[in-house]
Amino acid sequence: MRNKLLVLNLILFAGISLTAMAGNSWITNFEEAKKAATDRHLPIFAYFSKSDTSKECMRFDAIVLQKPEFQNLASSSLVLFQLDLPRDQQSLPEEIKKRNDALIQNYGISSYPTVLLLNSKGEIIATINYDKGGAEKFVETLRKAIGK
Image 1 (spheres, rainbow, N blue to C red):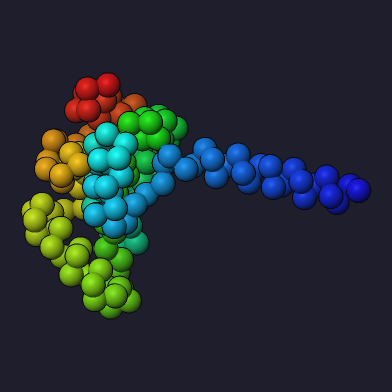
Image 2 (image 1 turned 90 degrees about the vertical axis):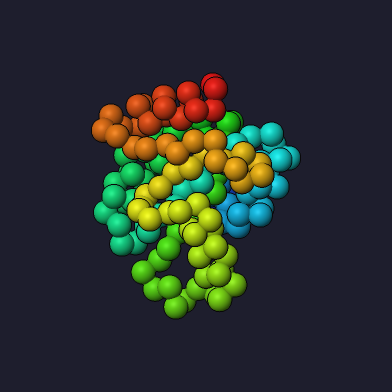
């Protein structure tokens, strides 16, 4: 009986965690992100990163993206899109490499991390730069850009 209660509690906790994360999941396919932005009437937070090689991306992730201030805003006001360029580009399917290269060229991405705020058509609303000040300052800048 005790084991059944433990299992039931774990299932309940997992369900609550997944529900809390559902509005805040990263989309890695740009066409899907545009569709979600259209369906939800929200802008796209496009994050271009090199998460396994760029110290700046790792720092940005820890200082901003993992913080509740950002996550709370993102879950209700943004569609999250990430284009991540791993160290081992050879492991990516050719279709994804071509898609990534086209987006990087289209938006003129030359440094990482880069954050663009886009409308549902993929047009740039704003480039959001990270300056010192942590998640609070970044979220404040982001709120101004989206009008919230």
